Image 1 (cartoon, rainbow, N blue to C red):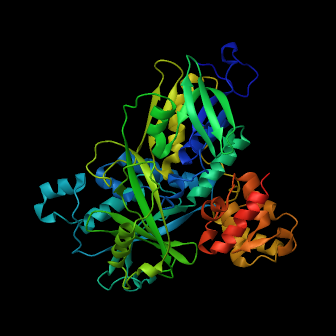
Image 2: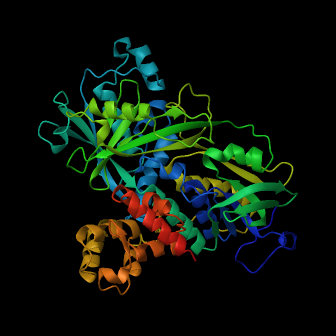
Image 3: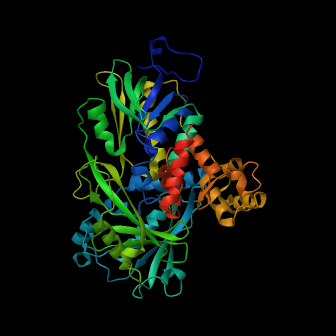
Length: 534
C-alpha cells in the first residue's frame, strides 16, 4: 500500500523519494479535472500536456452540457441520468462560461429514419408498421424521461411549440408545424479546461504545457517520468501513481510511454463542425434528426454566427490531424438545409473545426452507436499503480474525476473526500441570475467599454474581469489593441494566468476572436506574444 504524501505534517519514510503523489499525462478536460479534484484532496499533483491545454478533443466539442437525449435510444440510462444531474451542478459553479439554452426539436409524422438502435429494433419487432419511424409518442416519452431522470430543479421542462406562430418556426420549412422544446446548457469548452487547470494550480498542482512525457518507467512503489519541454530541456519526476488521461493518445501512452501491452481497445471517432453566417435571429437552438439516424444541432454562436454539428466518422490514425473534410461540411450543410427554408451555401461557412473522440471500444457496429460512457482501468500488478482513462463526455467530466479519485484513494488513504460539487470555478463566484447585473456594473465602472465588450469580458472572465481591468480609465490604459477589442492587457492576463503562448491559443481557444480578426492582426498578435514571453 502506498502512503499518502499530502499537505499534512506527517510524511511516510517509505515515500520520501517521490516528488509527487499523482502524475497526470494529458491536459484535456479529463486530465485537468482529475488534477483539480486530487489537488483539492491534499494530494501533490503534477500534469504534463504535450501541446496547449484543450488543444485536441476538449476544444472541438459541440459546446454543450447536455444529458444526451439520443443516448436514451441505446438504453444508456445511467450515463444520461448522471449527465442530467451534472448540468445543474455545473451551472451553479460557472455561470459565466455556462448558461441554459432551449432546444427546438421539429417533428412531422412522415419523417423516416434508416437507423438500427435497440429501441428501433424493439419497436420494429412489436409494431412492424413503425419500422423506420420515431412516432410522436416515443419522442414525447423520451423527453418526459429527459425531464425527470435528473431531478431537474433549475431548467424549465419540455413544452410543445406551434411553429406557425413562434419565432422558432420562421427559419424552417413550412412542412414543420409542430416542435418539442426542451432544456440543455451551453459551455465554453476550452475555457472550462483552463479554469480547471488554474484551480488545480491554485490548490498546489503543477501544470506543464508544451511538455511531452517521453518515457514512464515503473518501479516497485513509484514511477519515473521523463519529460521534454518545448525548448528541449529534459527532466524527470518521481510519482507514486501515474494517471493516463491522454485522450486520443491513451493507448499510445500505455504502450509507447509506459511500455505496457494494452488489452483495452480505443475507437477513434472524428466529430466535425461548421460555423456559418447567422441563420436565424432568435436565441434558441435546433435539434435536427436525419434519415441516417444521426442528429445534429444548429446553435446561435458568438452573437453573429451559427454553429452546426456534429458528424461521426471513424478516424484511423491518431497521428493524423483531424479536419472537417469537404464531404463532412457538405453533409452538415445539406442536413441542416433539409430543415431550413433557405439553402446553406459553401460561401456561408466562415470556419470549420474537428476533433477526435477516444471512445472505449465496446464492439458497437458504428461510430454513432459506440458508447460515450467513460471506463477507468487501474493497473497495479507488477509495480506502482497506473490509472487509464477511456472515453467520457464533457458534461460528466467532474463525475469522471470523482470516479477516478475513488480508484486512486485506496493508494492514498490519508487524502480527503469529494469536494468539487458546487465549488465555483475562477470568476464564477456569483449567482446564476447575476450575469446581467455583473455586465451592467462593469460597464458603469469602466464606461469606456462598449456594452458588447463588457458582455464578452464577463462571459470569459466573470468576476475576474474587474481584476483584469483594475485602474484603467480609458482604452489607452489597456495597451495595444490587436483588433476585435483584444487588448495587450487581456493578452498579458492570458499569458500570465492561463498558460497561453501563441496567438492560436488566444484567438481560437481562450477566446473565439479569430472569427473577427484578420490574418494580419493575428500575425501581429503572435509576434507581440513571442517578444513578450516571460
